[in-house]
Length: 101
Ligand SMILES: [Zn+2]
Image (cartoon, rainbow, N blue to C red):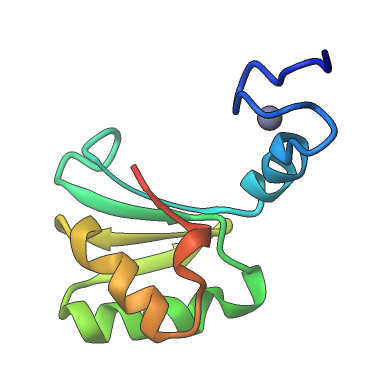
């Protein structure tokens, strides 16, 4: 009997967990927080630095909110995480690369 991956339950020869974990590091993470911002903000991490300011501009426009882009992340004012994914997808990001926490 071949060994079974504890994560996905598939035999190790066909298990893709390791590849998926590598993908995971490229994922875009969307979450809401109040920490250190006092007001509720929506954070988007993991975007390409090259697209950061343009993506921030598009998000602010489509969600009609304020926000900033720096240090590889976008901070949007207010709670928008339910909508951010749809906007990112409309901008050309892959749905499966966007992780709404
Ligand atoms: Zn596996």
